[in-house]
Length: 316
Image (cartoon, rainbow, N blue to C red; front, top):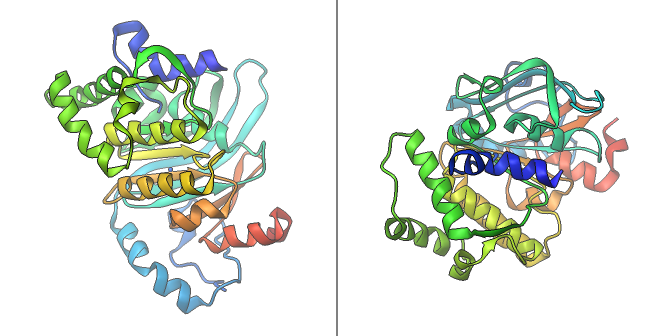
């Protein structure tokens, strides 16, 4: 699995000296879920008054309604390539510009598999359905091309890459993206000028640049480094798979603050998480519940509060 993730995230570097990063009480819906989210029933937990929910979220919802579709997945099915085991059983999800979505679910429900299928992980085979990113057929693109187009995935457990410095890794990523957009590549001095404000914005120690990619990093440092990669890529659609796992309270606050800075504007964000604590810091527009490889419920953040209090049985 480690080798496969190395291949996925650094395939272009190995083959052609380029790097890709594989690639985020109301009973009445705020928006028509059936229209916007493939017919999934919109059901919010009855934990907050309707007026309070609308007042807190009206600006986000209005903004999201105006955005173009970034990612549109319909009836996606997929299996493990080696064993043939079916994992995804009809996932439907639409994310528009400026929207933040979160997927929650038990272990083994297919959350991480979904993210890996989207970025082209070779361990999984798509058996049905469609996925379009910015209007382009995602499954017709190689993994590195998906990254160049602006799809980013932060892994649950970022791997170490001995012998590759962060500076070189980040600059190669940056220049691959710039070339794709028709922009001039940055030399080392120009790149440092591009990177320094991002380090300051994310409150990161410049010593990160001199270290090898994730080598000897703590769990919190690895997650910060993933966010730095996201900042450098300036991707339009980011998928953060359990970015909160293994973080203490202070590290989680720092990472959440950085994510909030990077998701401003028209960028899309999909968060995979088990815990409400992340969603209290990075507020989603929609929360989805995944079971047995399919999204079975969609609502607002009150779903996360209900799960925190009563577990998945409370949603039955």
